[in-house]
Amino acid sequence: MSDSTFNEPRLALNRIYTKTGDTGETKLVGGQTVRKDDLRIECYGTVDELNSFIGLARTTLEAFTPAAVPLANLAAILKRVQHELFNLGSILATVPKDVHPKQPRVTAVEVGQLEKEIDEANEQLSTLRSFVLPGGSRIDAELHVCRTVCRRAERLLVALAHDTPVPEEAIQYLNRLSDAFFVWSRQVNHVMQTPETLWQPNASASGQTEQ
Image (cartoon, rainbow, N blue to C red; front, side, top):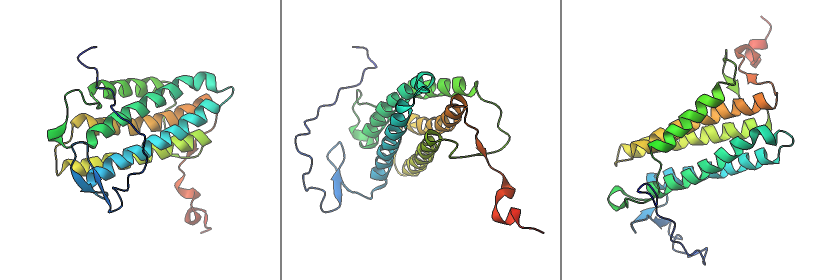
């Protein structure tokens, strides 16, 4: 086992409901009781929401035929990202003084890997001359949902960082991940040969009104 290996989960989920949250409170990893609308809970709850949407996008990708072959690598990347988001949630559910050295987290390695994947995907794409609207294809729209939820998670984490120390890699990771979702959404349209929907300011009702 290398020095960079994280601890494996030590869980026994034999009971799903405990009734301990009926008063609107929950416990952090260190045992502290906090309100469920606490900003820290909002942070890792939004990361959990993001993970669910990624699962939806990955399922859509894996169901594609015959496009599943060139997009199989992206499905594998999304599955890895889901694991990484659980690692991020572990840290966000823990106040700094209780963090264990081997506790799962996102690191500079994960940030660097996303940057590499963004660059590789972007090399396949044409230069944009306008902003892209979500919805060129089903998977494109789902990846844009992931992008916007990721941006919300990033904003919440930045807000949390005003009150308590937050690992800089955590904010960097969410920032790069949201960029990755944008590039991946374009990549799937490119692979599927689906035209992108570009923003046209004068496609609005007022823009089409006769003068």
